[in-house]
Length: 394
Image 1 (cartoon, rainbow, N blue to C red):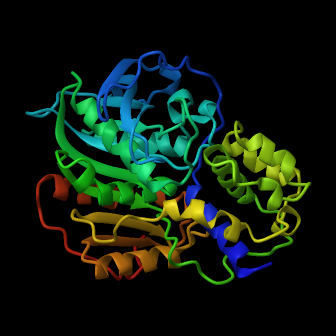
Image 2: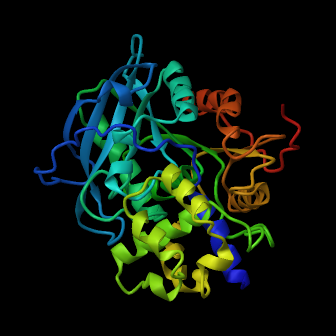
């Protein structure tokens, strides 16, 4: 197998997140009203209790207009959720966290607003609610709303995230224009990209900083990190999502040119099968990279995956990056390279490495540090750059 195909397996790890499959379907927010403008709230309604968070006093399913991140123009409706914390809001209203989620799938039924969140994410988001932040959580373009989901497209994720914040700030929810971007895995990449797009796309938002855990870095793929070509590999689920999303957006991407007859049945399921079920299906089918691909996956899909990059590494607001030393999904060496490159580009990075922790385990462990980072940036305090953490945190 070529080095390019090995690279594709690592790129697929961008989307890794611990999520649950859809356990119950929420009636989606009505789709009949056209999106009036980017960042405008279309409608909101109480969120079904099974999709809520313990730390929220109120929760709303929302729909708002956003710029089409595929075309770069035109308006599309996007769905999401708003959680309001318990207690009395501070003067001026609740500060806002914009939560960017990891991969859940590419079908509307996989949208986070229509499903219970994973135990990990419930714990994590409840921590932030307990700190006194409202949380607006976009589903991203094409998840839970009409149109294809442009999987791993950083511009689309950034526009969806920024417009979600503008939409809820424009509503009657008692929120303050003080914003923290937070994301994990694919969502960490989305949050980093959002910080990069913010100054030009949504200059009216007061974004104070970004918290990212398990962040991907396409520019630094470690040699050999993809593993054994003959080993059954659940990460192939992500490659199937890439292939399915690519074909939905541009029919010139012919999956049969890349995928074997053995893999095509799972490609056919990728459009509407959520991530946990896709993991199981890949393993059950015994898919390996050797029996899944008949040519270079990366070469075929490289134009689509260029949209997963960051608009800039020079971010104007501080960034917290938490890395598990044992992360093999977005390998620690990849994250380290991003920290070094972003620091060199002038970003203020507070980097932390957590020994013994993997991709998912880092999320809640890092909160003890990221909450202090958040308090500092919200107070306008200077963040000291830590571009080379010693990895001795416990």
